[in-house]
Length: 250
Image (cartoon, rainbow, N blue to C red; front, side, top):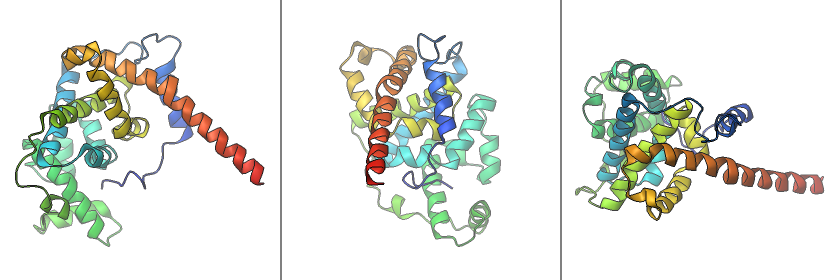
């Protein structure tokens, strides 16, 4: 059910336009969506996803691999709905969909399930992928995917990488909540490479020494300014260059 981000359908021009308006509205000097501020349930949701990403890093997955796999998956889409409807405190929607009652007991199980779903979908010839997943589970075919078999026996103890993973998961969920956007939409504009660069820059700034709960809104605003002032204009310049070359060829 998760998708290879390289093969995922790109965000439409209209979706990109709405995302731009959300961040660059003249009424919004702080860039973050006008009138939206983080509440206690939001912080809970962000922390929960931060722990999920940190667990994946602890298991041995690089964020370069895990972030796009999770953020573009239907599993993340169900998380979007679950967090939105129940503030991240109730996983019934997710459990009902996958019919795996123990799924939300630990972040490790969520990571394993994500890769198990990938493995089932890759191997099945059934066009109904959701049915194939249910059939595989009911048949007790939860064979360990190659991605999990290849993990190191010892957990990752790299504190810097674990800290980055938590920050990455936390800020991805924060962006989703602040702008009421899906995980796929947020990853569509903030790839892991962009986020890693922003994290390295953050560590060199005064905000790097502050608690993430207290600085998340400012970080979100900085990310949005980067997107509106730098990344999108650069993409437009590249697009215009490609269009000019096509015109020359024709």
